[in-house]
Length: 260
Ligand code: SAH
Image (cartoon, rainbow, N blue to C red):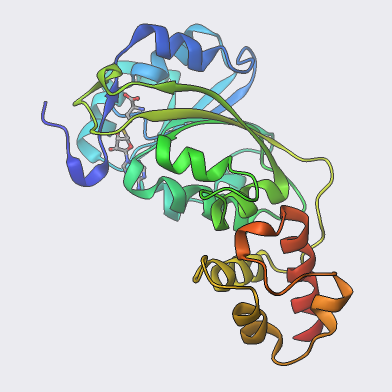
């Protein structure tokens, strides 16, 4: 079988890694959603743990048919693009999500989930594989070079923890880069932002010029109005990476107040 590069197909066939993934969080009697099951390597391992139900979303029709033959009615196969699915409507209970994500759209998937979250979390845990470079940006803290939009968006409603790094030889075909397995859990408390798209906008404007001083993005968002920087006690000579998570959430709330 020839893996399709355009669909980010790198199949995980390292038993010790598969074991590790299914032991991150309990599966027995849970409702599971797996993104990009491919040939079903991880799916088989999940099934061994006796979940209540498994949904899988696989875009590749050829693979979806292989999965149908392999698993029959043990799993529910959705042959579609994960970016087009409303996961919250799949089932009326929380889903635990697993995925060795297609790396070309891994950030797009995560950002879609974060931006679409309403007051209700449709998932209880996310166990996701990313390329290491992206995982590093997701878990980054302020004052580091990898800190930015992705860490600020992720940390708003989610706790994130790295489980481990995974070497290219655990996959077929081997990717050129290392991977990391991340574990996300919903936060009980998070800063109130009316429209998450505004958080995306604010962080985009700030990190467009990550080496420039804060003056420039401040001017772009708030004009010559100094009230916001005064109120939040922000030194405009600092750089975007020097502001912590909380400050970006507050800045977004201020932006929402001012833009009505
Ligand atoms: N989980 C499998 C395969 C991971 S490779 C394993 O670990 O072996 C990524 C998988 O995501 C591939 O099967 C690919 O076909 C699928 N995929 C790629 N883009 C997708 C999309 N937009 N929606 C759903 N699945 C997608």
